[in-house]
Length: 586
Image 1: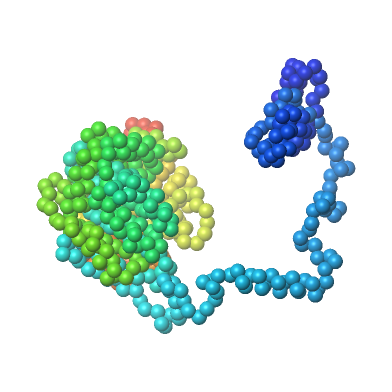
Image 2: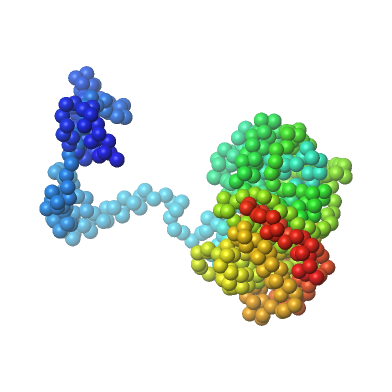
């Protein structure tokens, strides 16, 4: 393109009467042009101040650069094939050239360097016999103690849970798990308050911290995390352990004294609208499954995503919602920390959150049990890839059900994923959905098992993506596999592989500070205590083929199916009616 433009300009005489245009390398062009354009005053300025040339980003060229056109054959004999020795610029010194230096002189230079380094190295990093404070000792396994989860309840109802770390003792993850979720947005004006709270977390100024995020960065690069769901929310800080005492006042003000401003809330709402437009189709399918399973009139049927604008959602509404669900509800707050001494955490919690008192609120913001209904929802929403997402599920037990671990093993056994997956161990390529759906049906783009658990119940099923004309075929295949689980026991190989994978995932995830913090907080908030990991592994090992067969049989025989389809280009009659889907399981 450069050569073409140069030829056109030359033909039109833009650069003078000459029609011959020569091309030179860019470095040569810049050097020659710059030299040619220096005025007498500038040369005088350059002689007085050698750095004056850096004041100008580009030279003020008044004539065209010289461009010279050549062909490869013209310079083939001048190309350096690497056989000739490298030429050293005149006057340059090769610091690595040892020619002319004897071995004795080299040894003397090395000793001088060692002496110089030994004088400049700080004594703080000199190897010694003592371990610096705060660094866990490198002890054999026989001398290590098993970390213990400690739990304390304050007078106002706040529960404090912590566990020391056997490794990575220099960092801590602390925060609060609360019963703040979208299911508690009972009034229409509150719809979307949970999403706004997540976006504005640590982003609104407080009385002592005009910019909380900058303060966190000053604490050795501390990071904040906020995650909201239908039933619970987490607000936590991951930081170096010596800064825990400095982080607690910030955490208190961010959670108890945020300055809600209408402008911030409106900006957050706009951001949520943009996020909804670009939301993954799988997330929209999940919302459609919730709506089909519970209906829009129940708490669990309300959309967790901010899918449409709510003009009634203002800063005062968000503040009232936060006040009722968090500030005035200490009995449903859990302060959790991974990597801290428990008594110290209790003292910090008492100092900063011990003054909170339980305040009775109206029943509209309390948890109201949702009843499983079952149904069908079809959303006409074109996905960027043109595929249709389909889901088929049934009712199962919730967090307090005895079938919880069995359903988790079943989900791992079915596995699944995308038809395109980069290899590697642990990808679930030998799970049932990979072997019997993705590897069998070429039109299946993705297929995986899902499970959504809540306080009173849960939903388990299969979801996937395919072309619009194959959407009903995928629903039928899902139904066949669910029925097959109810009438035929899984193989020993499948069951053992699923239990080993689930057990390995649980143990591996708990190596993370954040996962440990979250696990302790959520378990205490849900059950009132934390189950030891050995008990969880024992429950996984106790699952049998009969348990899996029984839980699926009860799901498809005693409850109605839930079906959701999200996509475009769905002609009338493409998807079977809900009555027909129900007959598949009768």
